[in-house]
Image 1: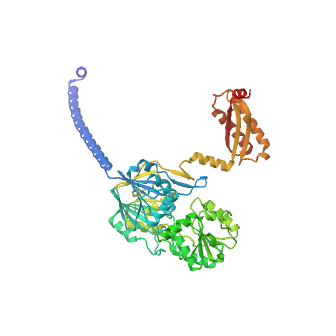
Image 2 (image 1 turned 90 degrees about the vertical axis):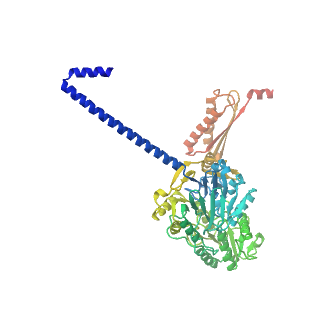
Image 3 (image 1 turned 45 degrees about the horizontal axis):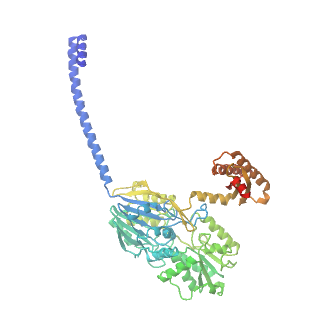
Length: 625
């Protein structure tokens, strides 16, 4: 109604001709409005169609088979290798390794992966698969597999023998072991795994070709391409080429030596170096290596026999592994070659080789104890030759250097891989990594096993080999990698991290404990003991001050007198200002005031430990009466 009145007023004010023009204009405008409305309607329909298409595409992507790959260790670090591969209700786990503690992890024996995610999904786990028997791949088994006894484990004969030895040491029974051979196929849930022989610094090393609903995932394990291996059994390059012809969806390749150009030297070079050094030695020869490096142990024993020397194996772990490897045929030792404790002292020095652990400067290892004059049967002499047949693991350099210095001070001649070729890596260098990519022709690529600079360089090598950057990911511990037939990407996080093993305690040592240990090791301990009235809070006796690793009491009497006065004043200030039985405020105040004073006087921060005893003075007086 209002609209008609307005139109009437406009017609009254304007001339007739203009009114007619206005009507024409209005009609034209109306036509345009209709056209615009129709266009808008078409646009809306188009937008709806586009959204529906996008929604359908997302739905299709969501419905695509997706394999989840979850590194729980071995990424951004050396050691602690462990990878979870998951599809719907099936999980397989590759390796279960440990790493050595860093220098600031005081008192820690081992560091192992956090397996909270596996514990939560225990019913999905179909098997543990082991690529080989080195500690960074099997070292965590006694601490982790005890909680997964119903899950079968698969690996080479030597690998499983070493794992079973660890289980015996920790009195763990009921592990379901399954020995595999080169070319063996294992069906676990939706996964079919083929074990492919590779060359490494230990026998029974394998890569894993894992058939999944989205294609084949190739996990190389640790490998190198050695054309003259000690055991005469070459890496099965033809099997890798055959995989490439069939199609590899994802290559997960180890990255330890990704920054080294060229090829890794053959183990035969080490044998030649050992033979030359044994020929030169005039006294006893000590060779330190990893206990699990069975191939290196075989080299040493074989050369010792050829040079007419007997071999003494020092250390319980090394002795046990030597026994295991001999029993299953991986070590061949002539009768009469090995010496026992009683025979060692009756053999001439120039006829003895002593095999020991300690190439990494481990505190409790045989060679370290010898260098500290703490070994029960062996001491270092001036005419001894000590061969360190390994390279220091990152973080162990200082410990190794200190041990070498002590050995040299005792007159020993120390040989390491900087002086002679007494160690070669068991890991592929750049040209071998390129060969792996060329043989397998992967659609997607993911570097594993190494610190982030290793992973980054390996991805650069992959890019140079023609793998697009959007076809590769650099993983992270605890970050899910989602693999489909069409793509690869990083997904959500799962619980992960490091668990500290200290003696028989697993996971009960956290950052707070490590911080306390660091504080104690650097600045010592300062204990304040006092007794107060349970009712009034008045000081009854003390304070007694005890210093351990902070200052020598007899030379710091003035400092202690002033510290005692600060404690007395603190108690007086808080007297009658507390809830009976609650000494938290008093302890915190003593800790804070004493810490500030001691730092002001000494520039050191010892751990302050207040001990407050409450005494019911009234009850005590009645008792005396």
